[in-house]
Image 1: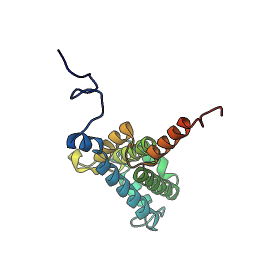
Image 2 (image 1 turned 45 degrees about the horizontal axis):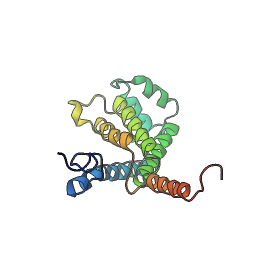
Image 3 (image 1 turned 90 degrees about the horizontal axis):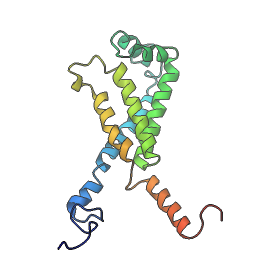
Image 4 (image 1 turned 120 degrees about the vertical axis):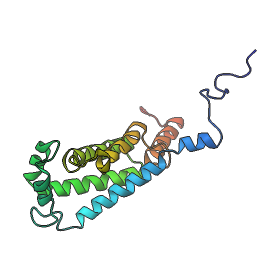
Length: 179
């Protein structure tokens, strides 16, 4: 005769307890912190670098685009950016900054992670594409690192969770839709 229910059995559906379960629950926090800090820093670094935001000249995004055009995996993306390198530079920097801050705060975590993955994908298909062997290029690794966050979101220590709990408390108190 079996004792207990499926919810109480090890590996069942019930609440997890113990150090392994705790580690599993918080496993994505270091990744979220790393990506959030890195993208926030990358965005701020670009926004404060006047040479990068220039259309031409040493260290400019315009010069970088010219240099990688012939080796890019998706040269049409380079062509798009070359129409206005300064505007594209600002868009990239602001995008990285917003993705980084949202990831750190856990605000719209899946949307932010998807944005980070898209930025990394574009950088991989353009700037990092000619890197050989491929594993020397960091943009592909960043792309893969964003995917678990895009799938799982930010359950712990996040604005998303705080908002979810606040909505739930409001519903529990009879403050739901239609009141």
